[in-house]
Length: 430
Image (cartoon, rainbow, N blue to C red; front, side, top):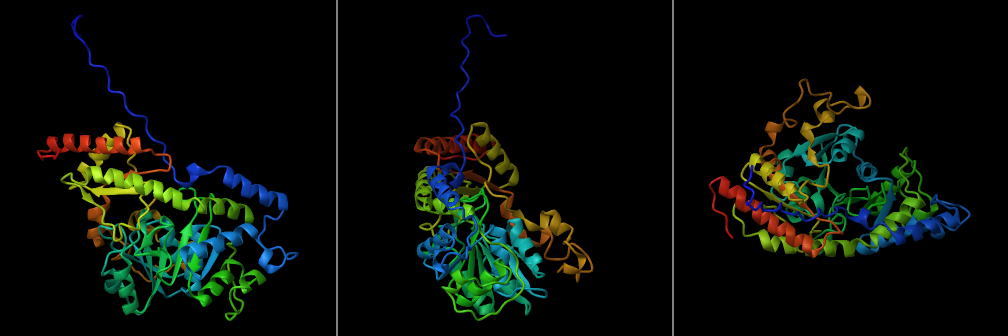
């Protein structure tokens, strides 16, 4: 027990934990207004034949137009989800049974399963310190069966597209850009999603901007656009889309991934907030980085184009997984959010890969492998990826964060760094 006259030091009062959120945190009057307009018209379906083609789908068509204008791309097609967008992009490229698609091992489930759903084989590739597809992997993995590579622009940062495009073109394969986590990010002045052959964005609830679900396909290629339109709408090319492209492909069996007008209304309102959101998060990110980038022992994520990232999340690696876990634990204890905002993970660790199961055995592209997991689908096959993904600490940011929040994060990272590195016998700069 303490002596009666001993003064106890009062417990440290923690700063309240800031509330995470990107587009979902800014849902408000703008979304309500556009949704109300749809309800008043009683036209939630975008194709209504009592209207002229150019008047159909006011919200969805406007979202597509503003996407084309902002992204400086020839064609844009709204669909029901980012996953639907990936399947539509693969179908537009004619990817099917017997084909191979190179996919980063560190990616979201849809990157893998969309390829499998097309009947093609996902071939897993290493990532590098950008947390995106590593240079040299396309060249290493390409075979006569490779038809495309899927480049994931991870969490607001565009991959190193100059090198990857050069490899893909040399290999004679197409490039799909998965920008589900990176709408608005740029690479050397060009928007992510518009550099390869076809790109996709997602409006799922955890993404940068959201309509709950929803997605977008973009391309500069008229033929790919027509094929995408047909695949997403049961093989049809309705009069509205014929305004943008002369029909050449002919009907074929497709899926049904049409975006409705209510989803389009929310996505449109959110899309108009994208620049403001990115500017806010980029300012916070730069403020924090300027205060912690001198700390020894922290290996910061390499950003190929620092002028183009979205600033939604700061990543740094430590020398071991245990050290990174302890760093995150102490940050969390001090009310600093430090869990990554996405469901990205190593594909080879997931049940659908370990089991190689599909909805029907005959649809499986893995049936040719006599033993499983086969080489290329095991953790030991990805030393670069394994060396990165267990050692990182993430600092997610949000649109509700303030400058004071950024300063507190900076101070707390320095404090935790000082304590941990001193405990481990390292010298920390202050």
